[in-house]
Length: 272
Ligand SMILES: [Zn+2]
Image 1 (spheres, rainbow, N blue to C red):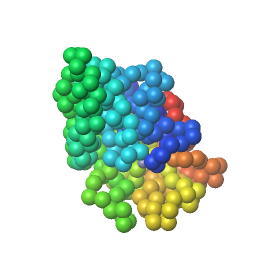
Image 2 (tube, rainbow, N blue to C red; image 1 turned 90 degrees about the vertical axis):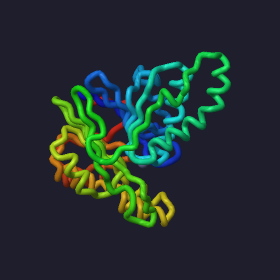
Image 3 (tube, protein in one colour; image 1 turned 120 degrees about the vertical axis):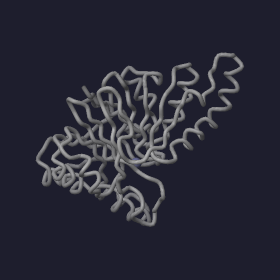
Image 4 (cartoon, rainbow, N blue to C red; image 1 turned 180 degrees about the vertical axis):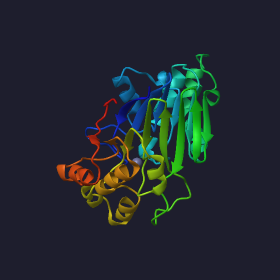
């Protein structure tokens, strides 16, 4: 049984008055997978009764800081608390990110290591840079990644890769758009999924950023109408919004004009 918890639903760098940074927890076949690790993720885990040591795998959709800023806290606290190995999986650059976190941890490790009780952190945190395809398979579930359209369409072009993810188990399938613009690959990935966790950018969000960023926001994120079209074209059961600022009645109506299935405006700590 796949169960899902939204730990943080606030996209964009910086803080949100009510939401924590982007992170979700997928529990399936006895494995706890953290999808993205935005700022505040350690506290959000505590809110649902888990500690940093209770995560088995972290999968990163992409390496923007609103999806990774909580990773240093997760890893260093886990190391200090002497919990076991953790696997990081993500697009190319994930191993380098892990190495950067280890560098950040080095002072703490040197200090606490004098107590003679810390393991070598490099041995605890295995990292895998993965290409699109099946990026993880376990007894009872698989995780598939496709490259979405979050990078490369505007002057913010990047050689990096950004992924959408699909979790399949016998009872349920869950798809994360990650951060993306319109994408045939994401539509194909989401085909027939029970739950689509989708990002959304509204006109208010676009108006709030400097003009040079607005083209990126329009082309490399999803408007409410585009969320609805994606969900309808893919034939998903339920859309859960995450990675958004606010959803006005007009925004939700725009989705519903395209998509007649269930629509939930996600909030931190919701479970599905
Ligand atoms: Zn983001």
